[in-house]
Image (tube, rainbow, N blue to C red; front, side, top):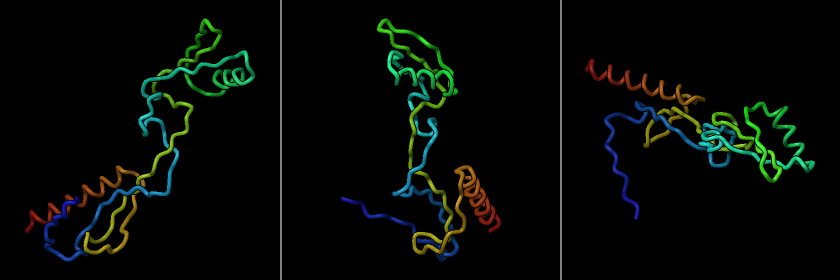
Length: 144
């Protein structure tokens, strides 16, 4: 059972308000950095074991040593595998995907959407815009 939404009756017309909104487009994903998606390999480090007795293992080891650009220690197992131990804080080998967040400022409120005022690419800019708007409101209220 859904509880009915309770709203305070606005004191001014919809055009006197701005709505700050963060939305996730449902049909879009973007490649994301390890740290932004909570990647455990990035946070804690990881091991990659390869069998250099096979063509695939030789290619993987060559890539890690010569092209990966990552820091690692190299170990050998009793079974003849090469283990590359990667420290935390560096990008793993996976491609991470996430839904982007779009930060919007719209004219109006829940009664009427009066159009887009400004989209923000960075969350910090959106937060700063919101804070400046709040400061303007506080100043108007203090002046009476």
